[in-house]
Image (cartoon, rainbow, N blue to C red; front, side, top):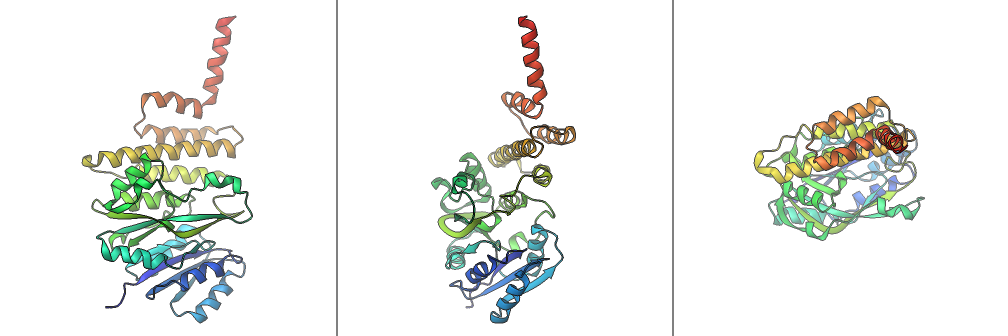
Length: 328
């Protein structure tokens, strides 16, 4: 019987120095039945030339060029072209371990799961390694195990502060998640996609393994290391808004509580990013969006004061002023 086909989707945008290493890792997997789909997202450097050189040598590499529209649309274009039983994403400045695909496929063969998740090596290329704490590659050991409900895995990940959201760390059955797509033209798109992957299908099951099958490059100029901008705030707010639309049944109270906590964490990150972007001065229209989204979550009473003071530092200044006046 022929081995199951795996579709590896690689979005490509101006990664000339790193692309050959990424493509080498895909075409040299120790697994035969692969289709590698590279979406050239309007690159202006030599990325397309590198892709064409590899395509001439490897018949299983598909190259499509589109106008620059961002990571989400490039990945969605790859999903439209994919015909494999399983989907795996790779970012074009990263690379896979040689046994990445075969390791995951073997688990799919042995266990009735809809997705397999693994861990990653993080390495720094032109960046200060003192930032290592900001880029976690390992999960809590308690998450490793065979075949559990995906919603349980999500809940445990949040409880253990060990949720890895990179879509590249999950291989999944294509037909089981046929309609799942990335939200277009935002950053932090993985926060939404991976959470939906784990929560939307009631009976979905996952196996999480400790194998480090993915190598993530932390480099200057990438989306995760560039200076925070308005688009980062907007990405957080859109992710929170879309996750609030997820409706989990009453029987999944653990997953619902974990989702509520995760949404609040995203909104707090949006607040922190606001302070960095606007040098501590928070625009009223952003604060309004934040408070409206916070109001749709279940907030413990003790957290309300903290959130209000965080979003409206003027309240703290007013309180201190009143206290000083009363002492006079």
